[in-house]
Amino acid sequence: MELLKFYQTMIGEARSPQKMYYGNIVMYLYYSNFLVYICKQKKYLPMNTYRFSYQLIIAFLIFACIGCSNQKKDEFDSKIVNIPVSADGKNEKARMPKFEFEQTQHDFGKLIQGEKVSFTYKFKNVGDAMLVISSVLPGCNCTVAQFTQTPVPPGETGSITINFNTETKKGLVNSTVVVQANTYPADTRLSFTANVDLP
Image 1 (cartoon, rainbow, N blue to C red):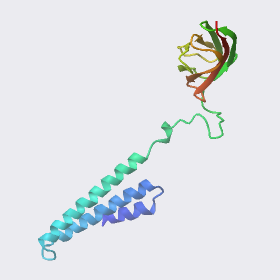
Image 2 (image 1 turned 30 degrees about the horizontal axis):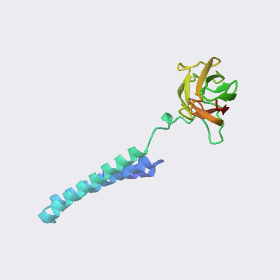
Image 3 (image 1 turned 60 degrees about the vertical axis):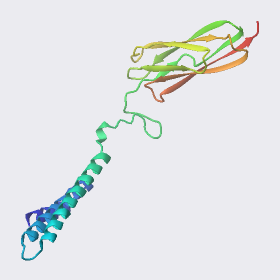
Image 4 (image 1 turned 120 degrees about the vertical axis):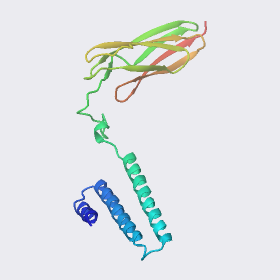
């Protein structure tokens, strides 16, 4: 009877699905103990009913354990979730780094096929957290890039240098370089153009 009173109290004060769920477990335990009590009264129930009651108790416990497991799997602590930018793209709380490039596009002009040229994109971290470049992905195998690989503090500068080989190119060339960093958005695109003439 004490378990039943506790169950009624738990349900009456429930403010969340978690309390309701534990209240149901208490209910299972109450009825399980009640069935055991009845089964022990041999003059009321035969032996096969006694065994069936224990099987029913085990089924209740398995059901309760599966429910607990599913609930814990679906729950997570909201404190570990970090959403740096809201749905409207604005962010006023999270400290984030931010690129500010002197230029994001460069024109090499006219080149003779076989020439190798390079250009350096300079940037400043105008955010309020360390800026870390994870990778720089050229748009074609004719381009190789070097970049600042150490964290760039707020207010400091860094650079990304591309080396363009025109050996297999001719005519107008448009290419992009994708910079991946801990910024928002994570990808920043740089581009360059060139007009390659045959020798």
